[in-house]
Structure formats: C-alpha cells, structure tokens
Figure 1 (cartoon, one colour):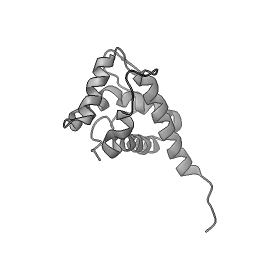
Figure 2: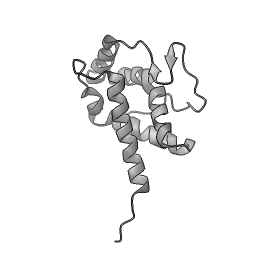
Figure 3: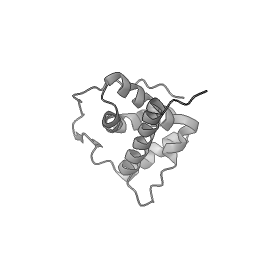
Length: 130
C-alpha cells in the first residue's frame, strides 16, 4: 500500500488550485490520464500515484463528503477509498479503458461512490446475533 501523505489536509471550505472546480480539475485530457495510468502500471507507480492524487483528490473529497458529514468520518472514508484504489497494484484504476464509452471523471465518480457506499454499509449494517 502507498502512504496517503498528500491531500488529506483538505477540509471545508475547500481550497482549489487555479483552473479547477469542485468536481476536480478541468481540462484533463485523455493523454494526461493515459500517462497517469501508464505510470501506475510501470515502475514509476509512486509518481503516478502522486499525479493522480494531485489531480483527483479534491474530487474524491467532494464525493466522500456527500456520504460523511463529520470531518473525522470523512477522513477515514477518504483513506479507505484511496487504499482501495491503490490495492493490488492499482487494479481498480488500471481497469479503466480510455477507449471505452465513459470519461475518466465519470468512471472515477461511480467507483468512488460505490466505495463510499461500502463504508457506510459496513458502519451501519444490522448487528447479527452470534
């Protein structure tokens, strides 16, 4: 697993870099995403992960805050999402097909939403008797 040392200090109100919106970076080209994905699959996984977090951590934080209002719970959920995205050699991220029908932002939103739902289900599921 990779350390989650970047972008965990983002809190409401968000401070976005110039040229970005609350939904993440605008103007991300397919070539940029393909270069991040190729870094993740090559020997440069660390730099690819940093590039990914630089580009998409704000978007992930917005998605997480839709499910968790408490800042500490949101931070735990964000860490869970990042951990799952980096598991097994970035298996989830590298499953994206750039030539497929979905844009990366849309695909990442659905993926992160499903991971947040997993966190909520795990936290609030019914207790079963032993």
